[in-house]
Image (cartoon, rainbow, N blue to C red; front, side):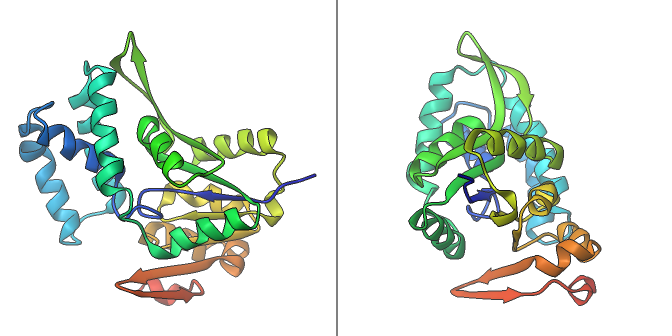
Length: 242
């Protein structure tokens, strides 16, 4: 029997920010890494994005490079402790729409799968928190329990596409009846693969690709959640005019 699946990105789709950024801040708070890594390099990038003067994907790419560089040589005990703190203190800071959809899919017996560019040690804990079926995150490679600096990414569309192939085989998934939820350009192939794509608070780059793909545009639902209101929209070129 073929199964229906729901593929969820995490950062910006479920979680209202980036798990990696939250972990970065916790490492600084507990003096595990030097705060100058943030204040001398990441703060300007963050402020540009916060003032909506920068591109979200560029912001995350720069922060990710700095994060990886900053945690080289850390042992897994430090990583696990701070990861637990992120989940304990921040894991409920999610979009209510996405949380309700996860519950709806689980209640209906669907396979719920997280596919995220965040570190696998954070994605695994988030998957446990929300009791989902399976997950894939960026693989941060440890050697003798020390982070080596090697990362096998899961934030680009090609990597997520490969992950979906693996999950289809593992869980015997019928993609034509399945769902995908994403917010950035790295989720575009994930949305294209399923019969029910949903873009949640999409970036302009992702929305542009949806609008310019007639087949995808016709079936995609755009969700915008602001304050305590959820808006359901059809993608259109008018959304790109600003």
